[in-house]
Image 1 (cartoon, rainbow, N blue to C red):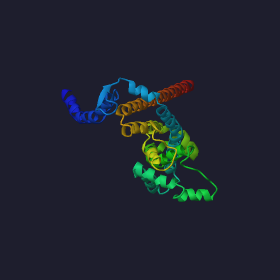
Image 2 (cartoon, helix red, strand yellow):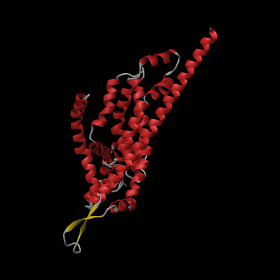
Image 3 (spheres, rainbow, N blue to C red):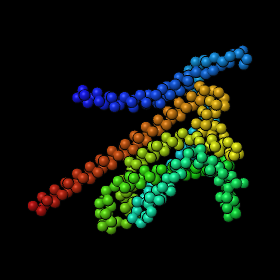
Image 4 (cartoon, rainbow, N blue to C red):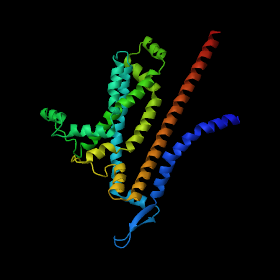
Length: 318
């Protein structure tokens, strides 16, 4: 037993060292940095000194309207992006998993390729496609009488959602497709023999059996959505779009740190965003856990009822 414990400790030590170096230490430094601020003395002509301010940076961040509005933008982004991503990725995976699908490997690769493009390059590509003077897409839309300004206040959020969908749809489709491939084929064959059509098999068998993958992708997507930064930052640079330098909480922290040199405020904003992500992750995990427990109890109850019914029929026959 001691040898086994020693072996486990040796194998886990590199992980904990790396986890401490890249996670615990940076988070601890950010929390420490958020408790201080730099102040100048001598009417701005003297040097700067670091002063302990406690929770003042958190109060300043929460009291800033721009920071609060950033969370409103994230809420709208999540409400639009997450359902489209989950439905689109799952729908594509079901299509590839169907018996009618052809050239599965080609379409998997074609749909996954956008994810291989770095986020900043993807954003630059779409900025080109959104610019009226350059984009053949916008020109074709105008010629067809469909005018839409992707950089307007109303068009900015859909523009960012479209870029994110282009990047991540294929990646999540691969996850769902792998989960669908893991389903026991005998279950699907039995449903087909019983007369179930493709739609009924998809909604009554396949989707319930990949709920764990749906929950996982949903959780990771929520966390990733809260970190929205690259796409709006590119749209903010020289496009004339409605995206401001504080459009999201991440952009607010970036602006506070590198434009205003207020690292304490930037750290406080980052810690608040991290706490929000942690709370949402906990809520989603608890919700999915309760649903799994409820499903397991329902399945156990149904199994017990079937056993009792079978026993009663045997007794009546006897």
